[in-house]
Length: 241
Image (cartoon, rainbow, N blue to C red):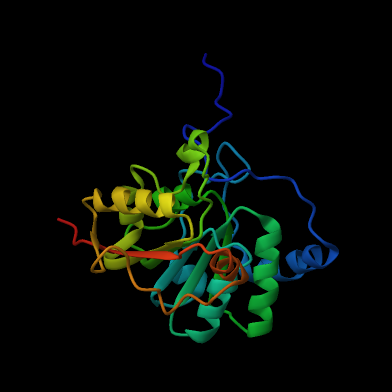
């Protein structure tokens, strides 16, 4: 009999270090995770998603509403702001770093954002199997790790094949929004997504205008202060055949 597999087939876009959460983050996790965190059955790894697991937005949020999914939500600044100012929509933050999720829950609770849920998992697996096909109205990827060394670019979130992954999760006409302060990665994103038959450009010219719904974060501000240009992209899901 073959030995059971204990690893993923493809490199992931993160290195999950075992940094300890602060006492405040531990308290936030204990108090708020029952409200905000959607537990996911696991597959091979701690952040994997079992292929049979499913996320039912209507059951989770208790209503039918547009769903916005942010991949790599970090400390949650963008999605908490959006959730607290758009009560008509539902929001899902996907992140692998628990300390960031704890911070997100603290800020969401202070803002009274009850239309937000969090998933601690590898994002491509969420998009490929966990979400129902066509569930997302918008998919956000803001400032994902550029993995700028040549030997590491295979770890980038947006690499060949990602268009199909994003296209599966988006409804027809849904929008994929991206931003990065790393020019080489921006150009790779554009090439990968231009080549994806599931998607079409939702902008004119070389780059999309800055997305008004993206709140300015300390991370973005730091990139601007260092002289890096912020490049936005936006793609629309074409109608399924």
